[in-house]
Image (cartoon, rainbow, N blue to C red; front, side, top):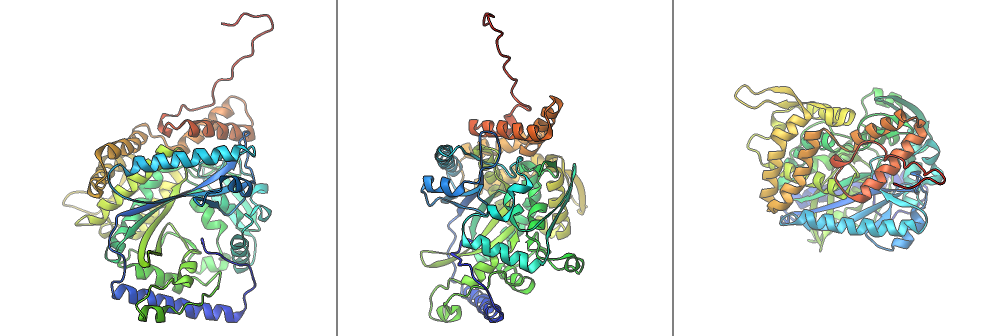
Length: 512
């Protein structure tokens, strides 16, 4: 959705023309695939991180325009609401000390952004959902001042035709209605990109779908919304419900939601783009002047603008991406499941685990997805979001008897998936020092059964026990989180609870 979009009204002919252009784009994509016109493998990966702005009191700050003006870097851009920013790290080649380099770049970028935010009494908080967000913060008046967000909101609201219903039952039960898609802005995530050849795309996408559940189990960081303790990773149900164009009747008919895990394993990237056209009506029927089939026939590289724009309004947890670099088309898998934070080390550890695991899963002689029903992979994802580090999964059994069995997520990650991730990083050519450091962070989270969500929940409950109100406990938890995030130690090392208050000296007493 990074396209330059100008707000306006659409009529029936716009939608008809857009549908026709989408079909031409899909045919153009098919031609490019058949003619093998895509880029050769470059082992390229990229990272995007969505961020929150909060004050020293832990409360959200609606200041992204002012902060971005001060940052003045193309690496940072707006997100949906005024308390959001996004930072983009330039693509890197997987190999060597890539993760240490990424960590250093990210620390430098975030420290600079935080300094600039403090000029307007705000700060950067890297967290899945800011615990102090309230319903009054997530209203259309707080949309970022960018035409495409207003237009997207208007089109989703019009397609739904009624208020959005948020109904998430976790540790507590949240039921609310919303008049706009702005509650989706509460969800701040890490997006991991991996450029792949068309021939490898299906295996990598299937592997990424399998990896979703363990990613969330070890990386959950979003337990609170609107003062309620919900799922350990509450972003997926919130994202689904806050962008749902389906009224209850269409949900009952089995119409697919735009925030979607999918429904089957695939054999090519083309299938996902074709599904987009088959199942989802256009939200933004904006047509480009390009004739994609003519460009392909002339040996050129089409932008496929309509296909790219439409794809950006369908929120798969692993999204196919068509892109162009140096005039040559390429495909990427965009992994969107992880929440932001808690620290730079944690983000990079999550990335190392993902890139290593996906490489190994995609290259197995008997891939997991040939032994695991797709519905079981989706159920695993749901369990991971609900229970985080304490989830249990259905997983293929090892040994001659086959079939599936139930396994504790921590046991699965520690005993089976971390060795696969390690082998995958070796295959990418990542140096042992990087491999051991960052996978060691995942191993320690498993050993201690700690992630960002469990720390937030434990600290919040400790604050309640100390006599704080719910609102004060959430604000104190957020402030403490921000302190520890800036200190930079990975979350498994964070002490639970709030720092002990220092008792004031009595007048005339001797210190010490």
